[in-house]
Length: 319
Image 1 (cartoon, rainbow, N blue to C red):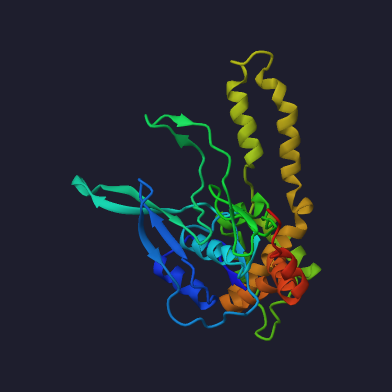
Image 2 (cartoon, rainbow, N blue to C red; image 1 turned 120 degrees about the vertical axis):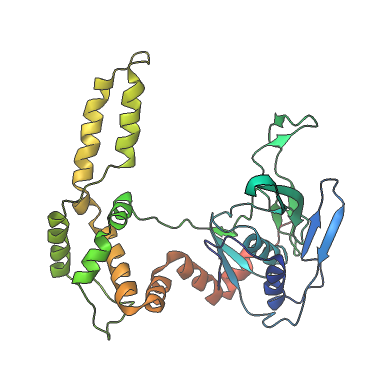
């Protein structure tokens, strides 16, 4: 399993090498084309394939960009791997930096990356006509993988099976920004023999945290409150709406936020367990824990361990 989630990219040649580790294909892996559509550079497999037949799943998310998208997209185009997770960022531009006066720099796009099927991974939010004016985005163009599966350009890499990762609620960001997780960890140590995957906060530990939380006089303003307060500021300038009309809704949001320790207990408890393991047992143990509890990794493992599931996801369609 190749986890490229959160991977913003790197060197193109390293991406080509990684693709080459898993493929025996003699096809073009990456091509760059300039503004006039002429091919400027072509990259083929390099070095010896280390695991050309190893079942492979590649995990991506919205933060997988550039070189990591080239790896995921090329392996998808070659039908060499099942792509799992969220659609990728969509950065397929070749850019050069030119120094300017007073320490400024100019970044110029000189070409785009294209992967084996011929598609470009760059996400297109809009097009421009010959005069440089924005025009409506055209429909995505269809391309085909080596076995005939349809894939599309202009929107990054879309996974073969999509699964969105869950995010912690905003209260956890507030706890972290105010350092309360670190302060609580300083008061609660873990035994060295603690098993990272199985560790859970006891009811006594949770009670200790809620007491600690009360001592710190923790408070924060939610995104919902900020948005409603911003609307209140301009409400009197709007037709049929006054700032006081929003007071009942704002009071309701604040009441819910005040109950966050009860309503979000499960998420806060899970975050503290992860934090304490990483803090006291080390980052490697924290990664071990997250790997065993990550639903996207679990899906990837299920796909890899079931040859029929992998075959079905890579099944070509008639066209």
